[in-house]
Image (cartoon, rainbow, N blue to C red; front, side):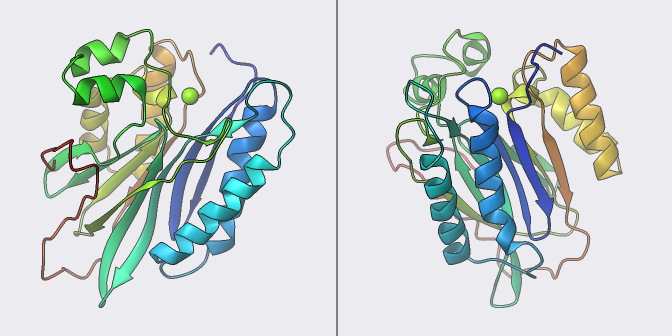
Length: 247
Ligand code: MG
């Protein structure tokens, strides 16, 4: 509702569902988010992707962004969050990746929660206990990211491998959604709306109604055909100094 440019980009084509939120002003951010998504588009059409595929596409995306012209400052950059459909020993997995403050959420076996962990100044303050989650939502530093692709460097993404369960629903979104709509309101839409496209449309509409101060992107992914895994062994690599309860 306020921005003249859309600096978000998305990839919504199996096996990849990604959102990138560009930064850098003018057309720079737009070029950065588009470049990263384009690097991953080479994997579209595969049945599944592995961590090596994701790492190679990520490296290609980093190279593309770092080669973009920098119009003063640190140069363009972008976040990247989302999921690739992966498989291991015949079991389906969500391979979630994240760099920056776009987010991936999961509704699975009746539990809803954010899978990705924001790379942001306020998230670090929440982790160390110097800020509460609700304070972080309105803190003036809430838009400052601590990792990005480009913008003066290139950070490694975090990865999570989560077994796919029948009925799983994932949401990948930019901070234009989460900056306007609470997690509880997001969860309510994801639980109540059967059709994934309508759910995404409703989430974007809610963010617009709440002010729409940033570009808003929402991708909703449903697992409709899943072989039930034998194990329920979520692995969530993250810094050991920052324990977090799965959920
Ligand atoms: Mg944004």
